[in-house]
Image (cartoon, rainbow, N blue to C red; front, side, top):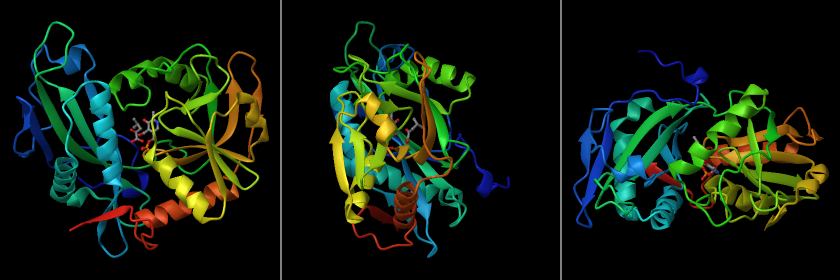
Length: 336
Ligand code: PLP
Ligand code: COI
């Protein structure tokens, strides 16, 4: 099958292999290579019944030099450990995480999109309770699996500004809940608000803090950032996922001589930003041109074209990821 690399959507495409291993009696087994897209799981698995499940998302890029680079896998490994602690999953050691993602990439090298196509190889580690329980308790067995799939931009617009809907009707996660972990339940909770946003023509939902509805929280499947007065500002909140892209953009902004702030961002402050956007592995940077509040119908308008700082951040990040610029922060692992 011919793959049209330039027009790949962000969706699942079958590749050749995935890798898997089980944790039984507290010990991880050998990593197995599988060519099946299916898993055989017990009908009483805790991952199915009680949401004892976590996943990750990271990307690999083909360079001009023909080398494949993975971006900041160590951070994804750490975050999966944090998610594991958050919902009592068996933790995947960083070395096992690394071995699994590198193996999955190497075995599917023909699916790494070519340099210059704008596409990348999305790596999806998955960890869940696979053991049978009927009472609510952590599983005694876990499956850790990594598959890969080539993807294009998450928002079909790519690096073009999109519209977001503030919805006060729904919360994605509670302040002391699981929002800071990458667990499936958070995404299930976002499906209805997301559908509402899509039906009204918006790319996604901008959530407000669940407790007071005063502050900006998570931005669809991404973090929010705003730019003004040579400062990069992003919400501090206990219910958003600590984004590795956001963490990287903060470092890049600092390297451009900008100030950076991670703090509560009141909704009214939206009016004061020159540029706003969503950032994440899938979204990369998605500039935002319009935000509408679903209760007051108040509109916040930004440029119809990506702003200069968002553009500079986006280009710099992509150039580091593809190896066009030196890896001055030590973010890239070359897949040998
Ligand atoms: N927030 C949510 C809810 C996400 O699903 C993601 C994607 O992983 C992010 C933020 C961005 O995180 P990262 O930049 O690590 O991909
Ligand atoms: C990512 O950015 O990697 C995500 O996980 C977002 C979404 C596909 C869940």
